[in-house]
Image (cartoon, rainbow, N blue to C red; front, top):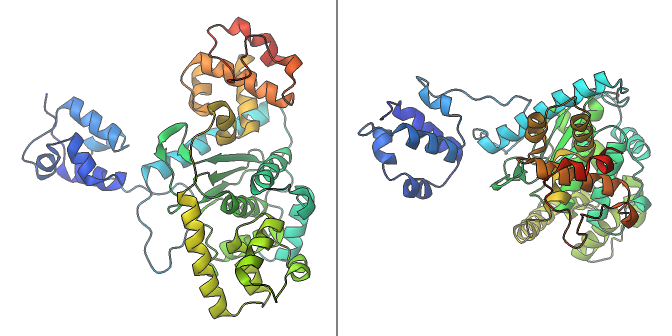
Length: 413
């Protein structure tokens, strides 16, 4: 059965997807004919095309292409260039996080959880130095508390933020679909402010050092009580007042200017000094370049040259980063450990359906849900070997279990 579709909608879906035209034509040889109206796809072909281009199939039956708007304020800046249409990957990621936020808000109300007191506790008129210092105290993130590596620092900041009531989600893919990679060039993070369910999302495809600044920047958004999507650019001073304030707070939070002045060696070679300071503060060298400029150690021209050189080097590192990882390690980080624990607990108690839990946690099978529940419980027990069930093969991680009777007592205890 052939389906009559407005050719403009097919061209719109193709452009919206961001996929390579050659790849699409290889999968749909009649694509040119469909877009010119010379031929019409079958219903099955149209459904396959919608799935490939990540387009809701209902959109393809509209009269004209829809105007898709970002559901949250957009603080991204790209110089003088207009921002391109948000990709399906970005939109789906925001929608997923909004659904999780709605669920956790209801969960908090049902379980009478307290509001997070620091959400919206600041204003743009407040001094960035004072706010940054307050954030360090609340989140226990003094310089000597960050650990030896960027990974340690990022993990600790995320854990301390969750302990303070913030849901931290870090992922480089849409949901758990590793074929749908998120692009740092499109966005680096976003914040969804809410007194009961504040969420920050960090693009995990970025470098670890860059992720630390993004996380700090998004936490500043929550402190301000401001929802927004960011690319967190440090190259130039952001024109938006909110972004300027959040950048300033994040920079002071991570690299206090007073400490930088004590540490900086003006006689050292700049590249070596950038690396040394970045290791000390556990941030990107780009952040150090920016702070040295703000501390008046680099002129405007020196800053531009140093920033451009560091940006090229950092991008090379980002392109060489390995991907992948253990699913049971990654998934709680992708959806927030606190959120995953709440959903699993609520599902096992019967208050949340398994289908809703699967959708919010990015799962498909009961056995995977069961294994994830046991894994998270073992994590909370600090990997105590005495508490790990006998059916768990510790050398490979949790096994796929067929029966809830094997794990329920352990996971719910």
